[in-house]
Amino acid sequence: MAVKDLLRLLVLAAIWGGSFLFMRMAAPSLGPAFLVEGRSFFAAIFLLFLAFYLKKNSRLLKDWKHYAFMGFFNSALPFLLFAQASLHLSTSQLSTLNATGPIWGYLIGVVLKIETLSLKRGLGLILGFMGVGLLFGHVDTQLDDAIWLSVALGLSAACCYGLASNYAKRSKSIDPFDNAHGSMWASAFLLLPTLFWFPMQSEPTPTVWMSVLALGVLCSGIAYLLYFRLIENLGAASALSVAFLIPLFGTFWGVVFLDEVLSWHVVMGMAVILLGTSLVTQFNPASLFASSKKME
Image (cartoon, rainbow, N blue to C red; front, side):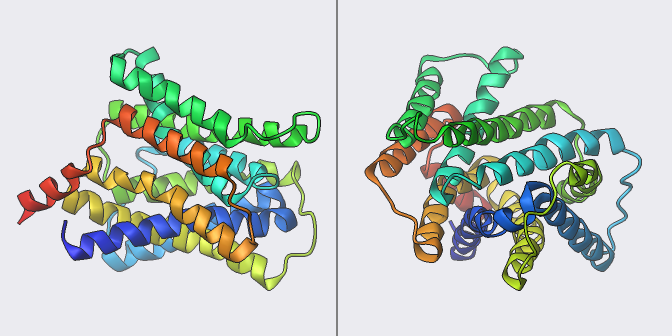
C-alpha cells in the first residue's frame, strides 16, 4: 500500500472513531434528534458547496426514491439509534457494536438469498454475537436495564447499515459522491419530525455545537471524500478494512478525552467481534498490499 493511502486509511478510521466521541459529548445536551439532524444538515450543506466547487451536476431529484431509502437506512435511522445509545454506552462499546455492520449485512444477504451460507462465514456470525456477549457480559441486568436497551439500539443501527449495503448491491449504479450528497439531504428532511418528539435537554455549550459541526463536516463530509479516494485507489473491499480500525480509535478517544475505563471485557469482546467480522467479510490483510501493487 502506498504511504499516502495508508495515511488516508488511518485518518479515516480516526475520524469515524471520533464520531462516537462527538456523539457522547453532544447527545446529553442536544438530545438524539437535534444531534443527528444537525449532523445530517451540516454534512448536506458541506457536500452541496463541494459539489459547486467541483462543478458536479448532481441530479438529486431524479433518483429521490433511492436517496430516500439510503438516507433513511444508511444515515437517519442508524444515526438516531446510535445517538440514543450514546447516552448510556462508552465510545469503545459504540464503535465495536458498529463493527457488527458487515455481520448483519451477510446475515441479511443469506435471508434474501443474495449470499450463500458457508462454514467459515457462519462461524464468523457466531463469533460476532459471542463477542457482543463478552463486551457486555459484566453488566448486571437488575442494576441498569437502560444499558441493555442501548445495546439493542446499537445492534439495530448496525443492522440498518447491513440492510443498506445489501440494497446498494442490488440497486442501479450511482456515483459515490452523489450517493453521499443525496442521502444526507434525505436524512436531514426525514429527521425533521423527530425534533418534535425529542426536545433539547439543556442549553448547548460552544463545545456541543462544535461537536455537531465536527460530526457533520468532518465525520460525514470530509470522511466520505477520504473513503471515496481509498475506493478509487485500493478497491471497495480493501477500503472496507477501515471497519477494523474504527473500534481501536473509538476506544482511544474515549480513554483520552472522556476518561473511560478500558476493561478486559471490552478488549476481549472487541477482539472476538472483529475476528467474526473478518471471517464474515472474508477479509485478507494481504489484499491491501496486492491491490496497491496492481495500481503501480
